[in-house]
Length: 78
Image (cartoon, rainbow, N blue to C red; front, side, top):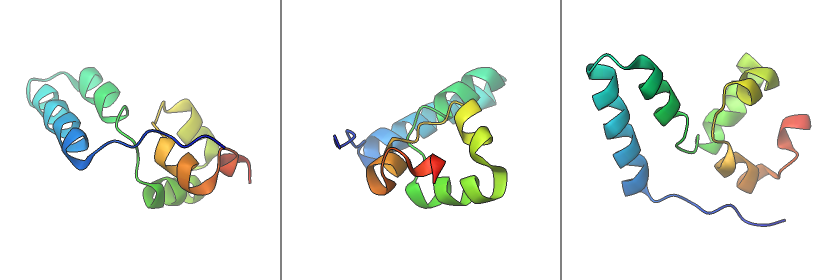
C-alpha cells in the first residue's frame, strides 16, 4: 500500500489561516473548500465516520489521506 504524502504542521496551519481569512471576508464557500483540502486528522475521521456516517465523509470532499495512511485505503468500507 503506497504511503500518502504527509503535510507538515506549518502547511496545515497555513491552510487553516488562509481559510479563516476567507471566512472573515465572507467567502464561506472558499473557506469550506480550503478547509476540506487539509488532511483531516485520523482520530477525527474515525469519529466522524462513526457519528456522521461514511456518506458524509465521501460526499463532503474531505481530505482523508491521513486516515487512509493510518487505517488503510479500505477503512471506510470496514
